[in-house]
Length: 153
Image (cartoon, rainbow, N blue to C red; front, side, top):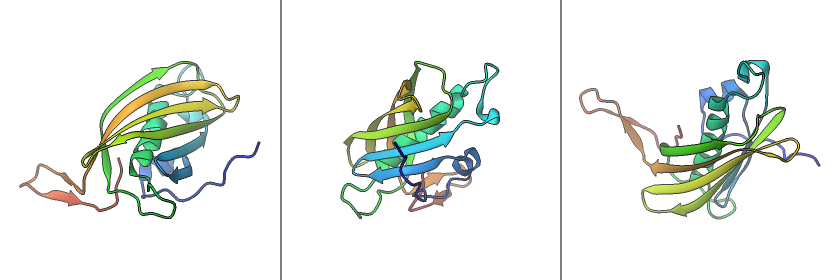
């Protein structure tokens, strides 16, 4: 079974690019983000570091939260993670694909879930996340804000 062709991410996220993530799906409340594990992504056991798996899930769920609800529609505004819970089921190895799904959307919040699957089709990690829609971030410096209409953490 061949994997989908990667597409550009909805926004420029330098950390995600550094990790080598690929966006495979971004529509109708769903997103898929994939990566191939490299040595620098592993822990001392030689398997995917938990922080890497959480980042993969965070990006997939944030994209699901921002995804257009109609084909060809515009993405929703930027999001930041408010809360995330993850459970690690199996060591991650090889090619990993995170599937993010939007469960519920309000005017200001998105409730999501995600899972990471390995190249054998086995569940590696499961997560739930809550994201806040916003157009800017307070910097704490004289009440200034970082304004962005299209951003994700």
